[in-house]
Length: 380
Ligand code: SAH
Ligand code: AVI
Image (cartoon, rainbow, N blue to C red; front, side):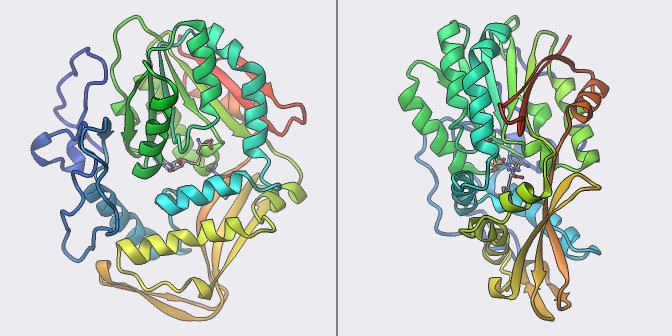
C-alpha cells in the first residue's frame, strides 16, 4: 500500500489520517463530510445512484470515499473475474442491501454464530470490561454493532469508556449504527469510520496517551480471510496497538459438516440472496450484465481445509459484460466463482496465529455448546 512520507500524527483524539495511495484530493480528509466523494464520476464508471449523501454534520470519518470504493471495486473485480478460477472478495457483498441481508441471516435458525457469540458476550462482557478498563472501543467490521452494546454497557458501568469507533466498509450500515448508538448512549463520543480493514487498520485513530484501547473484531469475520490475509491483518493490528491495548476476537469453531452446511444453506434462502447480492453490486457499480437467475448458490464445508467454501455456479454457458471495465467474461456451464470462504478455527490454531503476531492471550471463552469462541488478547 505504501504510505511514503506520512508525517507523524498529532497526539490528539481521533486525528483524521489520509492514505495517499487512495488519492485523497490534495491529501484532504473527509472528516464529517459523508458522501463527499459521491457524484465524482470515474471514466466508464457510474457512481451508484439512488444514494443520498448523509446529512452534513454527521460525524463520520471517511478513509474510503465512494470514488475510492468504486476504484477498488474495479481493480478487484478485474483481477478476480480474469483469474482462474474466478473469485470476488467478500467485502463487495456489503452495500446497504447486503448489510441488511447479513442481518437477516443472523436471525435464521440455522445460523447459530451470532446467537452463540451473544451468549458469550452476555456471560463475560463484565469480565472484559473489568480486565481491560478500555477508554476507547474500536470495532472492526462493525455492521449494526448490535451485540457490541453488551460491551458498551459493561465498559460504561466500569466507568472507563469515553469513545466508541465503529469501523466498516459499508457507509449506510456504520452511519445507521452510529446514529442509533448516539441516541442510546448520550455522552459517549461516537466516531464512525468508513474504511477497508485490509487497507486501513494502520490508520486507526490516535487517542490520548495513557487510555487503553480495545479493538473488537466480532462475528468471525476473521474467517473470511485466507491464511495470508489473516497473518497480514494480525501483524498490521499488532503494529498500531500500543502496550496496554487489547484485542477481542470472535471466531467460529470447527464442528460437524452437517451443521456447517445447514448454517450456510438456510432453508429460507436468505444466504442465497446475500451471495447473489455481489452480482447486483457489480451490475450497478460497474454496469455489468450478470443475470442472477443464471447462478446457483453453492456452500459446502471442506473438512480438510476446515472452511466453508461459498461460490456461485453458472447454470449454463454464457457471457457477462462488465462495461465499466471493457471486459467480457465467459462462464462455462457448471463453472464456479468463489465469493467467500468462512474458515472455522480450533483454539490451538488461533493461539498459534495470534502468538506469531506478538499477542499474548488473556482469556478464552466458548458458549455452553462450544460452538463459538471469544478470546481476549493483550499487547505487552
Ligand atoms: N461484526 C458484525 C457484522 C459482521 S458481517 C457482527 O458480528 O454481526 C461483516 C461486516 O464486516 C459487515 O458489516 C461488512 O460491511 C464488514 N466488512 C466486510 N469486509 C470489510 C472490509 N474489507 N473492511 C471493513 N469492513 C468490512
Ligand atoms: C461475516 N461473516 C463472518 C459471515 C460468515 O459466516 O462467514 C458472512 C456470511 N456468509 C454467509 N453467511 C454469512
